[in-house]
Image (spheres, one colour):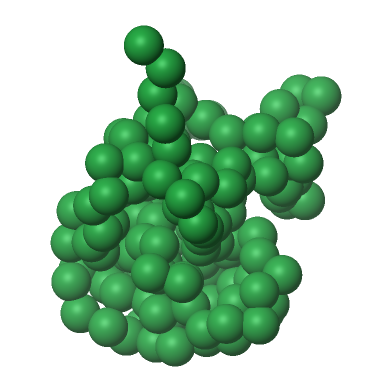
Length: 149
């Protein structure tokens, strides 16, 4: 039996399969981080089943069907920044712990939290009805194994 994908935008495969979106700040070995990851499986299956992806689910993988939303969402806690890849002219809705905290043009590809990122938080970046989650952790003090005398 052959699977049949729904017609329309949901049947278009994400270009991450053949056109990687490489994060310039951390491309990985041989640009590995530019390709789709296993985290995309759940959101892809849910979208294939015809379900709307909801921000409160905090899925951290980009679905491989339909609209792409932002790609390669990540945080730099020390700089209180969220980064993503996107060339969309749309607006990214940024949720922090289930509250909307900002609306940012997607093409800017970053947002700085004016309150900092001093504690663990769950962020969701939503673009074109596609939410992608990023969990931040507090910036820790350096771990000192032994002190110099």
